Image (cartoon, rainbow, N blue to C red; front, side, top):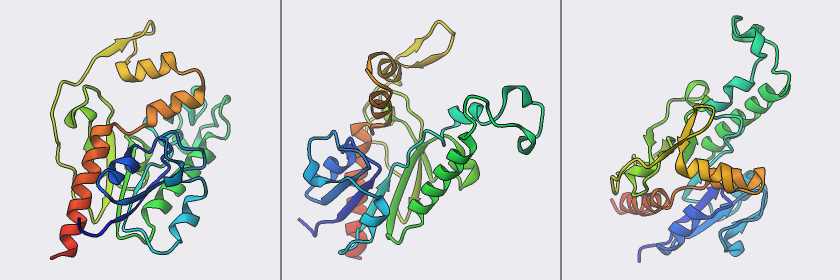
Length: 232
């Protein structure tokens, strides 16, 4: 094969993307502050991502999954006191249950921005629809699992530096939804994660894992693009 790319997958414990690149022969590593669950600790850095980035030789590509707990649009309701909805945002009190939510949000934003601005030529950052779109920059592309062979809905934004948009690989049905007693509905895969996960941490892992069809598309399309650019 052509030369191996050095790939760093930031904030990934599942190793879904890491293993997709490894399957193509590239030197890929996941990085997270927790142990990996993907079965290959020898490909995992359990340490500060910014310390790993400093290492030599440099990484050709980084795919970053900054934690979305405080960045997703679904969490905006917890930023302010429910009685202050009529006030301008900067005049609202913190939410009584989550008084530190705004500080956590700002920390999350700064972390994501810092990842995207690292001195790595090719960078992809993903997150759900949320604050990055309004407080950082508009995403380069928005994708769904059902565009890559999974009958599921999970709106995912991509911010791309020197990389092309992903090409859809297999369009399928959008998948089932489950309606809860409250009247709200969620995709079935999400509802299953809520129902069957034994802990909050396990639920977060299940909800954040990259669908394999998307991981495979990232590995094949972006590695091909980078190597083709080198040969031009």
